[in-house]
Length: 417
Image 1 (cartoon, rainbow, N blue to C red):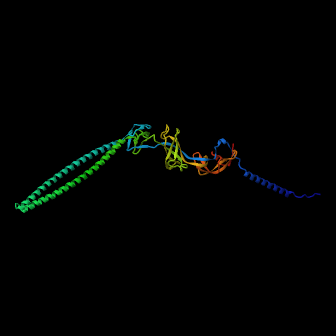
Image 2: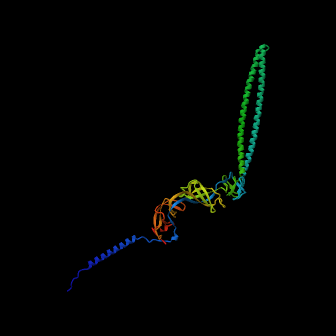
Image 3: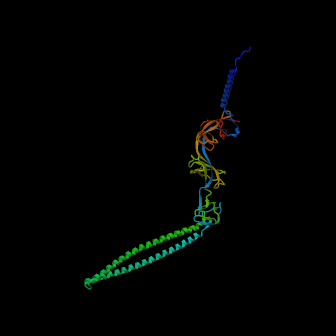
């Protein structure tokens, strides 16, 4: 006789569900644990990074920039008229005096204008002399006429006086006496008119001479100007110095205003530095500076700060206060360091490879023992060429990595080997 067994299907299904749930839970726990694990810290060779120690003390703030030596006194010689370069007498690098002829130009049209102006001046001078002689002759004629009228007036007055006396004695008629008196009065009136005419003629002569003199001055100025232009065809240096540039060639046609030469005074040089615009905000006039000519250091002071920014830099002029070393010459490349201020007691460290002043950056700080480094947020303050002030995030004695760590931006810890 067969005995019926109870069904095991439900139990098997339940066991499978329990096992599946346990497996899922185990996977979840393992995943959660793995997610909380920190990535393995990369290993860095100690010799391959720059490590500095935070310290407290005085700090000299400086900025540095590249530049060149430039002359304090420069004379650019322009062409005063059109011309053709006929001859070059002096080459660049030659010591010149103020009257040294550097080159010669030619301009036939200007030569003709100069001759024409000279002849017109001579003609004007002749006309002036001729007018002066003519006016003097006319004045003498008027003076002679006035003298004749004066003599006739005197004679008429004498005749009138005589006839008056004779008329009182009855020797002549009273009519003749009155006629003589009338003639005398007429001559007196004519004499007054002649004198006035003579005075007016003097003023008229002066006015004519002034007009002619003005024209003569105009001709003289024109002749002088054209003569100077002709003389300027022989280009002179104008100052004592060294011929620096001569950007022309024989046979070249030159326009008015074109640069013919550059003359400098070599003994009077200044440094022209280019400072990054982010570092130039604290530069002020009269600040001390040091210029490295690669052959010695020369002290100086800031004399000019360019108000404009060009290619991310600010141009700063430094006047040199000490003699230049041998070999210093215009356009020589130099390094300049400008002293901004001296801070008495600040927490400081070497300037990191990245991060501007007054910014917050992440730096790797070495843990005790020096085998590991942890990233910390550091607030920077004022900076110098090689140092930066620490405002927060570090304390005195901490060691930090200052070299570029962008390759480990994904890690917060480093192992130092």
